[in-house]
Image 1 (cartoon, rainbow, N blue to C red):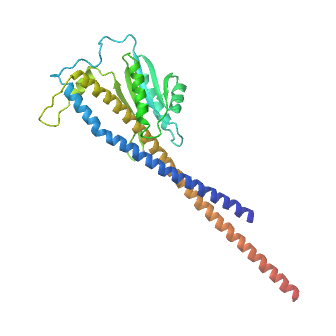
Image 2: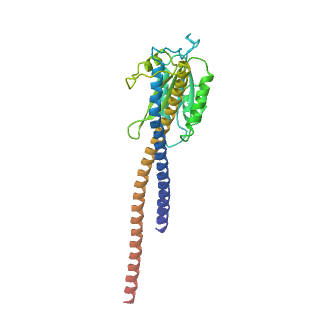
Image 3: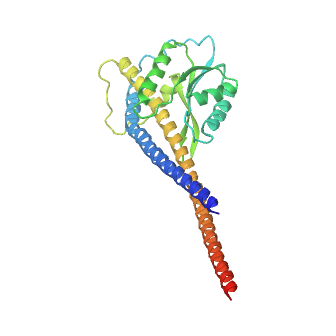
Length: 294
């Protein structure tokens, strides 16, 4: 019986150690969610300022040179997809749901498919689905690491002079601790894109003017638009990943608490049974000795 008690003690100790690890991971996930959500929130006002700047530059009265440059159609139609996944564990079906969403979207996309993957796991799933990933990037592990990633993606984008339909795919935080896959059209900056910004309403009655070259101003705003769009997608993907991990840790903690309750109950019952048996042995021995003396 003492051996059974020792086994239960080891199990309880292991469960308590695991619970401590889970609580630590919960704190880390919650902290990460906060910093990524703060990054997304801090971009909202800046993104709105970029929209207003594009509105001023793209108004019909200003009429800048087309951003897309040469209006001749591309020789070959290519659809580019930038997919943000996760490389860490304890995220459930995070990559699987995003892969299914990307596959459904690319099935109806025209031409060949060119995929840029952020994360080795999402890259592997896309390749298993039959797509060829042309570029692989590492998933950033902090807010400070997002900027180098986005800068590298933009550099690779500028090196490619072909006109391509470019989309961003990533998971975005939803209500509670859920997430949802989303798609955003990033390029080209065609007439439809320009018309959408030109139709925005200026918030005041005093209309601003562009000082200096309209073309250089538009190019600068477009660069910031691309940067903020990619940065926001990365931060939202990381926030969703950590929200998914936090939910998994909360489920794990509930399971560990239930396991500890069962183990402790079994331990106390086993210990009480052991004490009762020892008492019965003492009483039986005493009665046997008393009977022999009589």
